[in-house]
Image 1: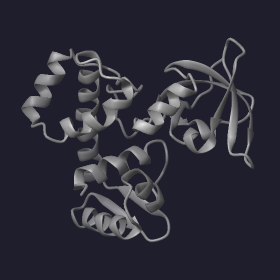
Image 2 (image 1 turned 30 degrees about the vertical axis):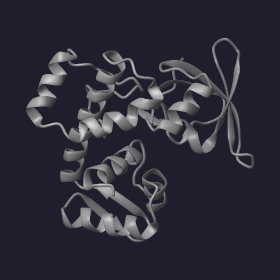
Image 3 (image 1 turned 90 degrees about the vertical axis):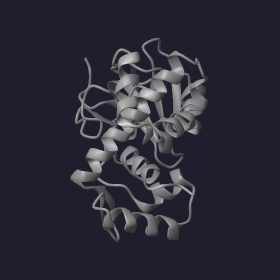
Length: 216
């Protein structure tokens, strides 16, 4: 059974670059029933960590954002450790990093940050030097308008999305030009600087993050 920290992490990650999180999103990432999500978010609300609205979803309270920011920072430190020191494949890192992060006490987190020389970025592009949940410079790729150039700066680090990211041969800091989208077939067509076309599923593009301000 998932604990409160895991649900808070899921909510925080889904809340990134969007105003609120739906129960449907939490169900998908937690792989649990609607009743379980309802009960867990009710418990998180009682703890003062989230605000629930019946039809519009869940948002983090100030207290929830503070705790979630700490959890995500610790999680990303563990990602860096597993990638740089244990050289694990990226698809294996998210789950193991979370299991590791959820057990660390504050002094250990501080020691780990020192050992890693205070990294600025996770292996998945997450910025560790700014407010992890209030970065107004990024947006989901799915919200980018046609015929716009931008830069891919991160993505949600779930095993399935990591595998999809690699399958599409995408890369962090990669410039991309959005040629067009097809809402009926649920995909967008991107072009690299080498004029290679990449087709990305629109549902996946919700969790691929790009610069909000287009580059020249």
